[in-house]
Image 1 (cartoon, one colour):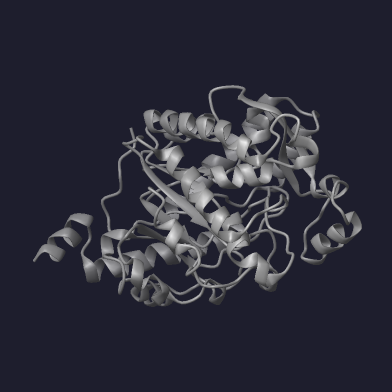
Image 2 (tube, rainbow, N blue to C red; image 1 turned 60 degrees about the vertical axis):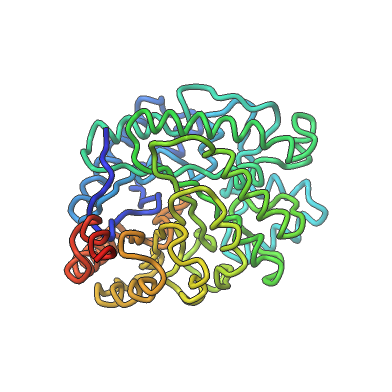
Length: 402
């Protein structure tokens, strides 16, 4: 059983880590049926163990497995569910009103349409094995005594990315009819992970940025954001309700929702921007413990937008840009964190990168050396903050009462 961290400003990651060339090649061969599952598992196990070593050396408090077994943060569910098939952006574009126009748009923002894939529903979905991430969690628990975080695609993202009318309408005539099965599977998964001893489950909902900011930005690629969408108020209310239904009545495990602005290229100008004002009324109504938010770049907006929502949830504060070559100095991370200490108590702030270091297995977003150095800077910043605010969560609570 993993323990909840007691230190203030716990350091963690959002999910994905850099995959080695051997693992990238192994995943391609495994998906093509050229190597057996046992061989791919050996490569993935080695990747997880190496990532655990890097996290330990950097000073990470809550560890992940780096999504080393996944082809990307959400498409891996196609391997875990009957009724789902992988379709590339190029294949999906064939069913759109302007296929060549959409292909050109995707290519213009550094997306490779033939390689970027979505898990698309074509039949009623059913779980194939133990769970979506049970195998990942079980291996991780066997190799660490630290608290474990498991990222899962959120229910809104799964229904938005998975329902594609041209392919899905016979199984689920509308995407709203699809959500019941998604919620059921995610609820069962959350209980399984809790019972295994997982400390924290993070639901990834990056498509909410597309809902909040996509209209102003024009038509842009967003991971899983190819399906039709209604007005933002409807979509954000639906996302809130789906998350709340997934976590309803399930206790004994920390939960969070992660929102970023996209994470598939190193080109900053391709991503959505805007402060969290349009999202916070809905995010703070989600019955989760923590909001894991991208805050390390100017695109994410100002800190004072959180003033109205101070201490309503914990914040997983993105304090380094996982795509950049520059390694943020601990002092700069401390300064950024102090902007949020105006609105959040010390025991409500976790520190993490903005997003993962390798959203898609075929495309790492940074090197291992730079990524490890960024994590070490976060841990050093956490140590400085603990010197000022107390070492433990109990210290912070005692100080607040005095």
